Length: 336
Image: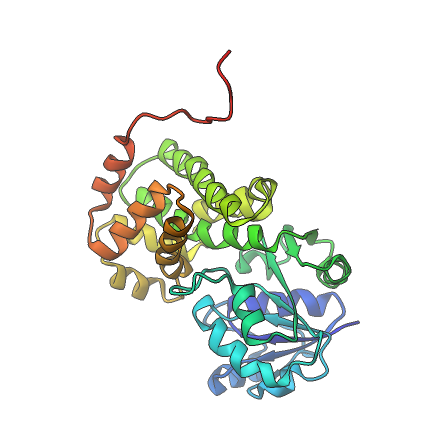
């Protein structure tokens, strides 16, 4: 049994608390919001963000971040990406040398272009930082629906330890040393999902979505490899796998936001209607910063930025993508 502190009491933190407690671990969940902790203490449920997923009465809750960290074998970082830096800074004085932190947020920080693990490592240099990602909606994990993910860690021993902690008959865990590739795939698929949602909102069909998914993974892979990620990562769970589920499912807040934009809502109106943090909005600008830095062409993500931040009509963005200069699909395949 491991002692686990979960930082963040949203849908993903709640689902993982359910999973880890069912795996026999001792879990404490932290939230900075007293009303949220009172709700959990009363109902053992996040009635707002993950209704119907009831946590074990053995799970405890706190607004004291030191209590959630001190003496824990693993800290699960489950706050939205825009709060990762501020939360990590708050955590740092309480984290012991070598203490394991596993981040489950997905995003790239605007301004620094840092991934979530890079932010955590900068703010908490004494920690052993890993990531968990893959096609895994909290709504399904919390119901015990079979799910497969990947843990990324620089240390194989840490990766195997975390694999044992999270693995169950409904949650299969692979391991990988490619933290950077995992995080780039996880963050940028949210931006592509905004495009896929917008196409749905415009009334386009399966052909369009398939095009966005396949050309989207091509863009993500180009950037990820240029940054030092392994190309095989982007064909795996946190590349193609996560991209498919995020572009196809109504559980995806990024896709839902995109649908509303495609139907004519403004970004602000769409975000307000989704009522949850739309991670792809925060990663879109950062993705453009990285594309410029590494001189990588990313036409879909470029058009997403124009729609989100420059007021471009989504149908015009699709037309411009369709009418780009003629290309070879894969330049690495030679002509005979």
